[in-house]
Length: 376
Ligand code: GLY
Image 1 (cartoon, rainbow, N blue to C red):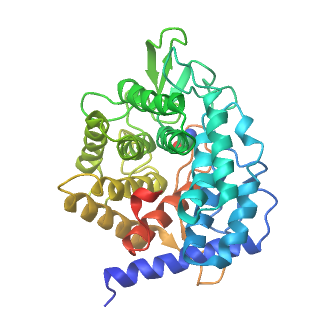
Image 2 (cartoon, helix red, strand yellow):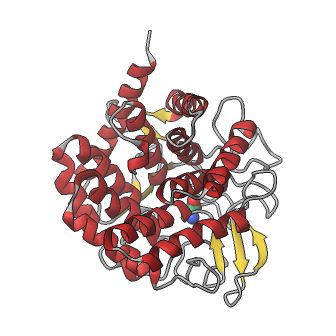
């Protein structure tokens, strides 16, 4: 009989073997998403919004096995220059691609890179609207620029800004982190605890002009990743910005909505409100993000056991149903399939997604007892 511990250990080994095989392939850029039949990665030259998650997997691996340290440093350095990209998704790149190396391994180069990333983000912070807007180079398919925002990178942005602000003693950066977090409760969280991905704000006053979704079924629907990103965002914000109960309240409200609405098998469809459910696509990456967020939440609330158990059951559901070998690769390798990047434009709708790999790896490391969920 396979125990829960065996299941976690086996899944970690399969995913670590995938990480090693990807490194051995000496890809020209950073992994983005992969074809589950061939394992072949589509890469990006500069990390797009996703590459930091690959580097984050390397930092997690390096924190357990120093054989991965050189690769983590080398891939982290590939982000150099991105601190000047006009996109809020720098938050993902420099949180996972740099800050993790500083926090988990004390790597000096990684800390310096994280500080450059945070300072870059601050050049885009608009005190009038209280947010770092999407920016002109955000990867979203439409509606980008200085009046647009989304929930997606709020956790990474807030954590990066708050942590770097503490490290270098920058009160303006700390204040930006607080404002960015609080404003996204107002912009994105609906009264019932569901989450609307995106909003337009007046850049002069910060007034919310409209609410919509870049990647969801509709403005009124709940795109699975929006809900999951919000769970991560407010949990990370509550941890990094203590003494503000409204952040923890938001984290609990959006997490409880997920737990109440997720299908019985615990794996989300790409949008909770697609009328074609159950005949539509899953998004395992949203489910991996949600599991990682619930493990963090369990570290912040007094009644933590229910969240931790739900996260554990969620990870088991992903491992049992969606971590699979790739037909043309050795059976020692397993990948998290059935991630849906962007159904609206038909991009990588049933694939291995590099950020899904990261969050599942994070959750597995926590459940294996090797990672404090609040350290990352
Ligand atoms: N923009 C981040 C995402 O697609 O989840």
